[in-house]
Length: 92
Image (cartoon, rainbow, N blue to C red; front, side, top):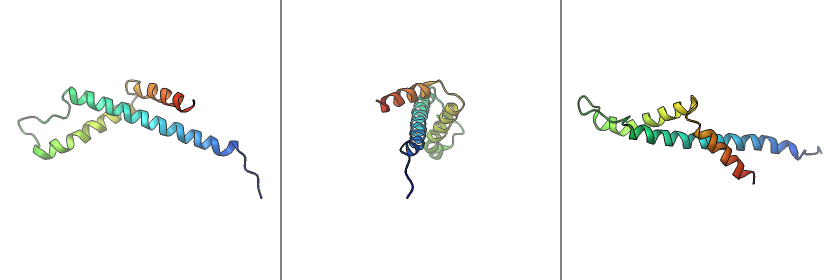
């Protein structure tokens, strides 16, 4: 029977935990940016030549994806601040 190294399993778990925290922080920043983009008028259909109800239904998905791409391109730094804060709270 082989011995189990107690340090071994915790390292991947710590990496997975950090990855999950970073993803959560990025989703939070993307949600924030999506709301800011909506407030700025992005995703509103024009009264002329609009796509109708279908466009209205799916425009929020477009805004959310644009916000996520902004985060992946560096965002506004909110995700990093959130990540560090979440990491600090989980390490207490």
